Amino acid sequence: MTMYSMSREVILDTAKEYVSKDRAKTHGSVERNFEHIAAVWSARLRMTITPHQVAIMLIDLKSARAWNNEEHADNWIDMAGYAACGGELSIKPQL
Image 1 (tube, rainbow, N blue to C red):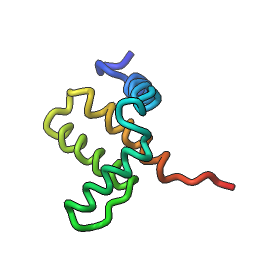
Image 2 (tube, one colour):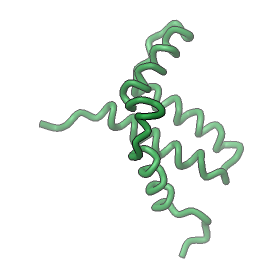
Image 3 (tube, helix red, strand yellow):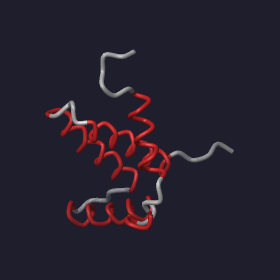
Image 4 (spheres, rainbow, N blue to C red):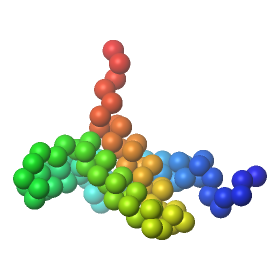
């Protein structure tokens, strides 16, 4: 038994549940959603942001929040979920 209130397995399982649910009805597909965010951020920042960089920047956002509020589970769960989405957008199958 761990001394922590939320195990890594629970964090990962919760993140998996969040990113595996049919969120497309609300937010669109991950690909389209992150492409749209990338386009908006690219225009605002006047530089090219890619969909996988969106995932990294969202992880940075949650990381900054966790820095000052380490006990808030949502930050850790969302970082894991954004990492999974970024990996899916980035990692090409090995042929």
